[in-house]
Length: 467
Image (cartoon, rainbow, N blue to C red):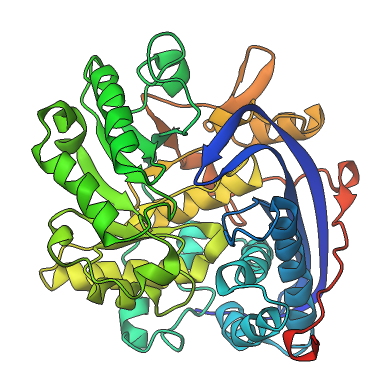
């Protein structure tokens, strides 16, 4: 049953993270980015106080890709999203269920961020991180693990933000959720990643034995087709079967350009090693164009939305346009993932082909990857993109004692290798057993003393006051 809680304190920290290889997606190349950390203290009615935590990269040029913004400006947006959300959450001093608190704050958050020209996807980042930390504290205080707690709907998730569902739909879905014992990794092939030979996509030392591959596109049909032909030749040499997904990160300008690529996939024999293994295509067009462009005949291929997932209504809107699915990312909101998974299950039970996919915005080893992995394992995501282990060298520059603590607490999830502690990938997948510990998928917290307070961004002049 849901517990009621009150938030007593919210603190933000950050730590720089260096990549061991550049990651190019869309129009941006990332070589380093800060990781934000959230520490929250709550009081649970009748139970006492507890501290919870969450973490997520402050990723540039994904939440807001508008070309006039510099990468650092989009990182500043995310810092502002956190700070605005903190003020809103702390105004609610009474006891209420975790989801009830989220529902009471999310509308005000979107409005406050809009006044600073922060779009809805970036606006949702602050509540997403705060909600994860609140849930971690709630589960710790009650001694429940994430999977059992959510199956019992400890957060009180209901349908008040999703008018197409009934409360009973959500409760029924959560009650049927069981932890997946393993989640296969989907190896990301960025636009700058090597394709052929040693260090290429088929090199097991590079792909960690993955059976699933996520291939980035740049929006030029001819260029993308030629690159996919090269990748297909390499993947065809694997000794095991494989599946692929394609991700354009909003780079296809319109339906005409997208149609050109789909025609190549359907008719070009050289593309068959990709086309025959293709599960779905993710977010091909810009989010504003997506919402105004029914897929029509292109829906013969399965498409999902990601960056266009900026509200609780995004999935029903996308479904009406011909999209089959939507991504789950903890940085977009754990409760929205639960609601969308409920929808996918309900629509699928009615005879439609609907899915919720596991995508990873470079979740770093530790809190971020564990909480995102647990979310997917709860809602039935059998394979998920995992960027962090590939683009960051294990725990990177995380203090050794902190990395050692995570290894000790989660020995099925991490391994010591080459002098570094990194994700332990077992036959192409990650194990989830140790995530079933009191709290939100973690038995330990980061070393708060080894990071800096969140950098204070300069608030923008509200749009209505700008001259």
